[in-house]
Length: 297
Image (cartoon, rainbow, N blue to C red; front, side, top):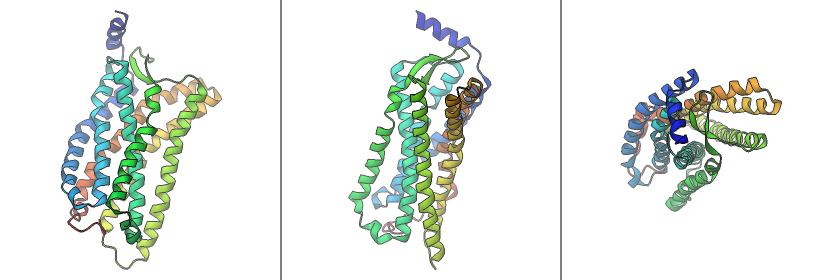
C-alpha cells in the first residue's frame, strides 16, 4: 500500500525542466534511431557471409545502439512520471544500457585499430584469420558485460527532488562515487588516446600512399568516431564537475551538476541514432562490400 501511494504521488508530482528536455531528446532518439538501426542491421546482414570483418564490426555497433534505444520508453516514462516498475527491472535495464554503451565504446575503438591494420598492414591483419576475428568480436561483448557489472550493484529506487520515484545510482559514500566517475572518465580518455594514435598513424600512412582504394570507408568510420566523441564529451565534462563538487563539498555546484546529469546523459543516446544516418549518407562505402573484398573493406 505504501508503494502504491508513493507511485501515485510520483504521477502527480511536477516535472522539472531538465527532465522535460531530457525526455524530449530521448523520444526523438527512439523515433529516429530504432527503425534506422534495424534498417542498417538488415542491410549489413547481407554481407556477413562474405567474411568481411568491417560489416561485422558495424553490425555489432548497430546491435549495441539498438539495445540502448529499445529501453528508452521506460526511461522516458520514468523521467515524466517516476519509476513504476520493480527494482529487478531497474537493475536489469541499467545493466543492459551500460553493456550497450561499453560495447559501443570498444567497438568504435576497435574500428580505429582495424582500419589502421587493414589499410597499412593488410598482410598482418589477414594472418588473424576468421577465427581470430570472431574471438575479437566475442571478447568485445564479454569485456563489455564485465565492465558493466557494477550497474547491477549501484542501482536502487529512490525519490528525486521533484518527488518522483526513480531508478537512480546509489553510492555508499563519496569515495565510491568519485571512484566510479573517475573510472568512467578513464575508460573514455584511454579510448580517445587509442583512437587518436591509430588515426594519426593511419592518415600519415594514407597521405604517403599514391593509391588508396578504401578512402570512402575510412571517411565513414572517421565520422562514426567523431560523432561518438562529440556526443559523449558533455557527459564526461559533467562527471568531472561532479567529482570536483564532491571533493570540494560544494553543495551548490553539486546540485547544478546533478541537474544537468539527465540532459548530458540523454545526449549520449543521440549518438546511437546518428550512426544509421551516417551509413545512409555513405551508401557508396557500404556498396564496396562484395565477395572477396576483405582486404579493402
